[in-house]
Length: 201
Ligand code: HEC
Image: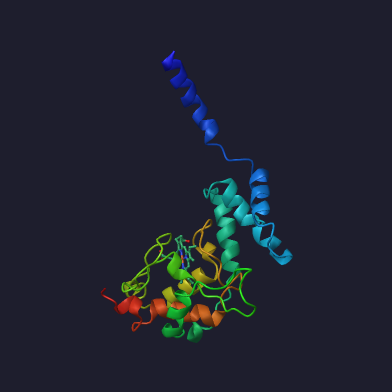
């Protein structure tokens, strides 16, 4: 009897692991943001790539992944090489600033990059999130190559360039950061004098 019960539970497992009804998920998300201003409704509606990543649990088919990364690459607006690497001091402030992008913000609030919420950058930082990989010594590990700095600009502009179902925000595409701000953050990662590359602890 116990054995039959156990078997029944095992057979039920795949059913439990099924993706919940997407329409129901959408309805719950929309209801949670019911008090958001009207202009914000689009923010809780998934775009095409988010829909694919949700429905496939971040395991898109090769063809889907290829289409997403190709569209992301086409979306990137790179500045001239002379403007890829900005001012690391400004970049550090932007990377460590988690303000902006909330409907409770005072008008005119300049958004930060909030990078520290997901990444370790300089080793001297007291706190940082670990959703993303550590970016410590990022430029040094890449011999401060301009081609890598260019690729990093593109990654920050639209992270889907290298990973179809990236969970990193699309800072350039969604106009969270300006091209100048992205260049300053790239400098924080790529300037040999930046604490990202000089800190030993
Ligand atoms: C919500 C979390 C989150 C935020 C905020 C975030 N990232 Fe990321 N980032 C990730 C994750 C997760 C990855 C690894 C997956 C991927 O490549 O997309 C990543 C990857 C990266 C990479 C590539 C790392 C490698 O292995 O080469 C770089 C560079 C990067 N992030 C820079 C930044 C910068 C700069 C900022 C701030 C402007 C930032 N990220 C903000 C989550 C985040």
